[in-house]
Length: 437
Picture (cartoon, rainbow, N blue to C red):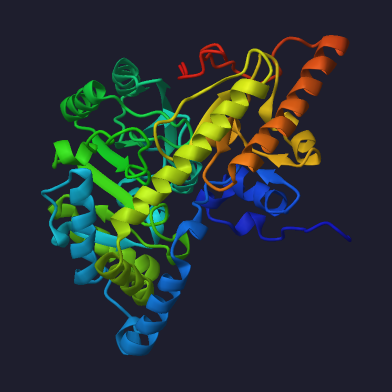
């Protein structure tokens, strides 16, 4: 039948595949990438800020001078040169006790999460994660047939008491969560940062409960207001798996990330990586190594910080000036994202087609929850669009929201739509931070 694809393989899929669904973000790419659409949706860094001529020359020299090795197969753990550079990068963030022997290079940060899921999760296992959390992690845990239980946040990040209750609730069922997955610094999608005091509390809670910690830190170097807090891994060595990537600080197209793991686990991660991809790209590793060795990468990060600070301010200013009453949002001090809460009764997922028709895109909040909640929220990205485009995007989005509110006022239905769980936030005029609980 024309226009319809019949899936004749449904009964043959493995059980872990049957519940998989397309991510909210991937489904948006086909329309959000159109030039007439102002995209507040993706999480793309502003690659044009790189010295592209110099990077291009570096890549050309790499192929011509080191092609015999950089275009060859590599080893599953990653090259020692890159692992040494990675330890230098982590030392800038405060992780000064890392050994190259305990670093496993991955195909982006996403493979790092996939390897840890494969290593620790059996079907039906429980993973604790902030609510909301990174959509890519939810996909990994879903593929592993794990059950994600969200832990509430507020404007200081993960709430320790909520974490303790989640651990107790799991124990009451006769189960134990395998690990806590957390993005403590400039969280995706909420933009909040776990406070200094809470970092120690969360680590103490996990240590008492025998709960492993998977710390995802793609954004920690992108701080706009002073230094970011020390990573969890800088405070505790045992039981903390630190994942990061060069996608946000250099080039996402190279797909180079890493895991810093406790030494006893390192070899199993390498074996799993070899079974998964055989070896990460030798050329991509050589490119990152050369970039870190020959170019002023720390100065480039400062450039990114200034650009993203300006764009964050532009987005926050537009939200303050243009958003309808009752809208609230977070005030990130780094990273790439703002998390917005809609006025009561609006549904970010239902509103999306009308937003696209108005040529603006965002990510509905439902994509960041395993249980489908988050209809009253949306994630807004400020890293990619220029300040004037950000303001225009907010203007268009505000217009869509005003129309939605007007229709509800005329036709009734002021109650929340099915599945909509209102998430409170500060008054729009106050704008600094959320109450995501």
